[in-house]
Length: 178
Image (cartoon, rainbow, N blue to C red; front, side, top):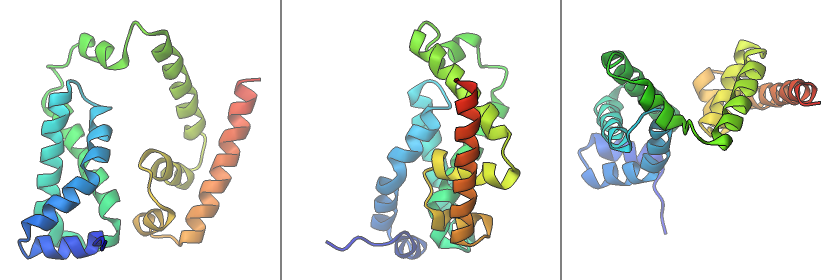
């Protein structure tokens, strides 16, 4: 069965093809939802922010010059939608919301938070370019080709930067957990 590319779907959406919009939404909605839901509480709010993300994306498609990086661009919009939400409602968030989202009473969540902190420290020791590549590759699950387009580097350079960063992270974490 023929699976249209993101670029083809974007062209069709710009020409007001609603089916293409539905296909693109179905292709990425779960990934974007999980990304947003990991950053906000409750899940109904994540659904609202997911809709806002796709509305902004579809409205801005004509401005997207490099359609090959649609997925990365969509994650950027989602991140900005979450940031905007927190900016607007920063006084409305309670510590209970944060505790619920983190699973305050769970031993596993404490261990996970410690691991996240260790990983964050390790990542912060990387160079700026290595941090960008690692974040795009691991947290956004971007392909090296997408990373190369987004950072305006060659695909090979993205791979080498990632490889070197992972070596540094392993070395740092091995020392940390000896």
